Image (tube, rainbow, N blue to C red; front, side, top):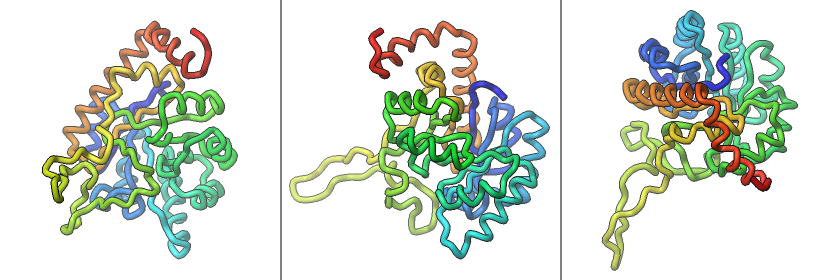
Length: 280
């Protein structure tokens, strides 16, 4: 396994060959009807089996997001499908519910457990609890500052960490946001990224977007690599494949460049020392 992973979204099975050719070390796909994205961007169990065959042939890892929120009545079906993911050889399942994590740990022997950013991991104590539950990777909350990420990693360095390095980032708490993700025609969209205008008495100007701008960390990736973050995720299971492939290529070049130039890590050490409260 590469020390630093470029993780790409897979919203359509036919896009997989081009995504792998663009340089992805791993792909993540949503399990049909059980992910946080619309079903049109999910893969069925049969499609995931086909994806597993292709990724295995090319040395690419397959991660499956099962990160919707389900009621008690749906738990048995969800756990049966998680067992199917283990049987097909999925490398990891990405979960966003503490109860599902607790139940899945008893089912999986080879497939890794990853804690979704939707789980809301903001501190090292949460990481330690997740480790006791068998979780091997934490996707850090998008609301964390760099020094907060650094403190968590230093407090629990034996866990794998993942961040969103390219694509959508939300400034709202993922678990609390109630903004709509579809219009009246049920087309998926992130409403907080749309253009809005303020209207009212004495108001006649455009409003700022609610969300943060998309992440583009290629130029400063060495900082996060020096911190000890292993996986760099590209958001966009609903984004066209050609756009994703361009993002993969940019991130691939950045990772390879920083790995080839180890002195670049030293460039960030003074910053990391300051973040830890150490005089540089």
